[in-house]
Image (tube, rainbow, N blue to C red; front, side, top):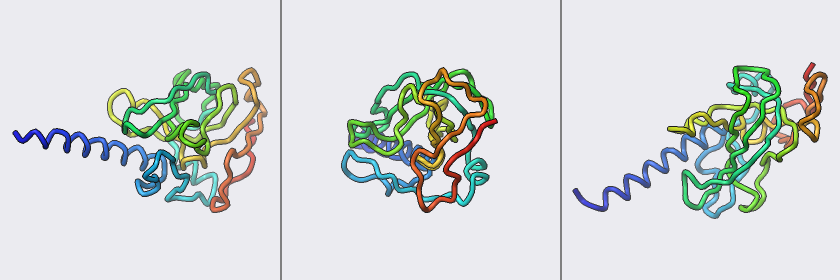
Length: 181
């Protein structure tokens, strides 16, 4: 076997995995810049909260309790993994703790939408679509469209909580606030 085939196959596999991950987030491979910075461009905008909800497999309220930055798909691309303590589930079924995967890190130019530990969120999520143990991780629907912030500490209750869209995009028609009864 030609020894040049193995590195080429590894590169193709990494590109396919990265493409699947980016597709799950609602942006295209072309949305990534060639540097270590991540673009916030999305392919899809949302005309309504119903549309965002329909594209989401899981909708949860909770708080990131821990974060780590990994380079597990591409050696020069950071992914921030947030351990997210689920306080309530609005759609789907979730265990007490899930992992939310976001492209980029604060070290790579403070990308939009990276979750903050200790901040309460209402998140609209999709499965990562990645293989192996990464398959249990989630991406935010629409890159940042599915991030709403709530109380500043996880001790706050979710009953009657108001959540504010973290990074409004004028191309979307999403409500600036959502009330969870």
